[in-house]
Image (tube, rainbow, N blue to C red; front, side):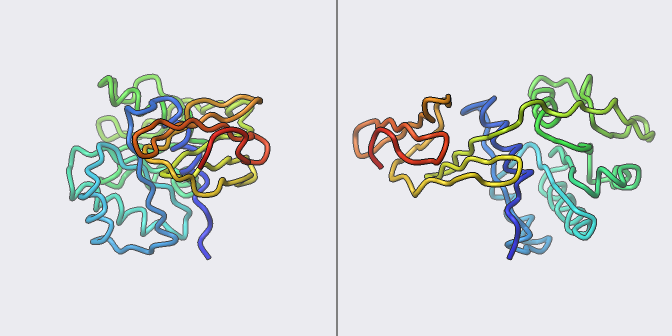
Length: 219
């Protein structure tokens, strides 16, 4: 069975926590779906992303290059960023692919956040640590990114699922929550607060941060 793409889930949760409703993210777990290049192109075309991020192990390198080709087929202006074990280890080789714009080395949460912020403000790669890119055909490797401190738990809200992700994997996952427009509002030791709509009213839920059980509200 395919492993859960925890690295991408961490980054998605980090971006959603920072940008709130100003960003829309879709994860395609190709270890599970095994899409070919044409199917990847169709997924990208339908979603119309401005940035495509690809995580790859060495055994998945050909799939990484296929995904990058598909993204640039959709739109040459789409920014393609690759990360994961293979680009980190073989960055000087991977960055020479004409369909890949930049590489993220090592942990990606803060680095990808800075890349997205720079993209939104038109700053390019200025001041971003832990990346590799080409400038005038020459490989540029920026200073290493410091490890993220105190990364104990990230909360990921997708559709009607709330998942807590720790460094070793998923700590807990709620039952399906029967709300529309489900979103994570805030989190503290006293409870994880969520909101959504049911029929014509707004519902607010509080979930235990320890085990994911519902403390207040209805589902």
